[in-house]
Image (cartoon, rainbow, N blue to C red; front, side, top):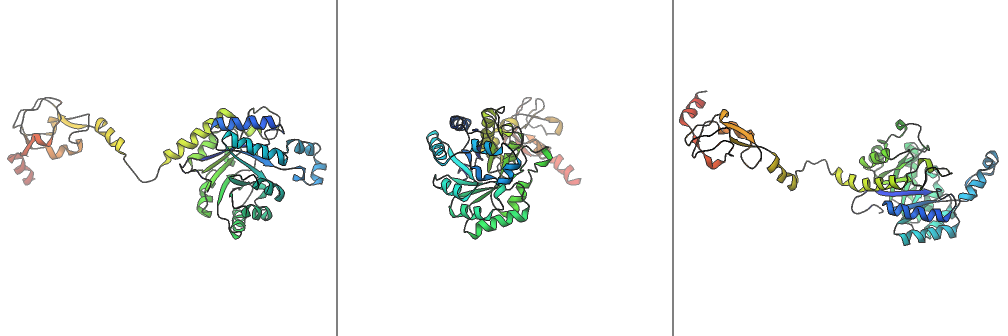
Length: 345
């Protein structure tokens, strides 16, 4: 299982095609992702077979751009080795069985299946056969399609899957499109760990997903949002990624559990911050206490203010000065007259 043993949210810096076909930019991005604290640097494996010929014909210039941003097999191996040297997990998203096989040979810790291939049983079966953790994005899919994809993986003997809630819009036109509570639905409906693949601008939604229990965050990553390319505008820059990775450690630790627990440290704090019953003024030995004789001051090492009614009618066995904390040792029995009045009442 991919998930960290310390419980922090696993953060994937999705470099994707933000290297723009420049391997030096790709290496610089890996270094920056590591410096920002990301757990993984992820790329995308494709060639010009990504689209049908007719689609290229209808979109002049696209084939050239796809070719320019593609990463050849030897280049992907070099990036995997560079990630290893840098101390960050390497991963990629394959878009064909050949690319899946080439990726598997590089021994990534997980295989990412993009939303566009959730309905591609052929690729899913191939990914299942690797035996690696599969991270499956669910953009554009209804629950029936997600169920079918999971059933396809399970039928291949694979159950080590993490679902990513995803809105396949770059970016979504409004925050209301994001529906982060779908994370809860996916977790409750399918029983698999759930994370979030974020295509929103900024990092606020990313942090909210962590607070809702995302076990994995995938966020596009760039060194410069102004660079030409497909995803730079919806990406986090190094400063934002550092905030995300910090939150990925702190927020899960802070979420805790629904069970109410007062820690030893907080209990010790209560001894300083809570109040105790003190003498409201100088009180002589033998005095019979009334509520008017009491006040309530910090610290909380004495008798609780909620015990005040129990002290009414008790005789003092020693003199008390104003503001002195009362203790059980200061109190004699209930005064006889007070006891008679109490019983008569």
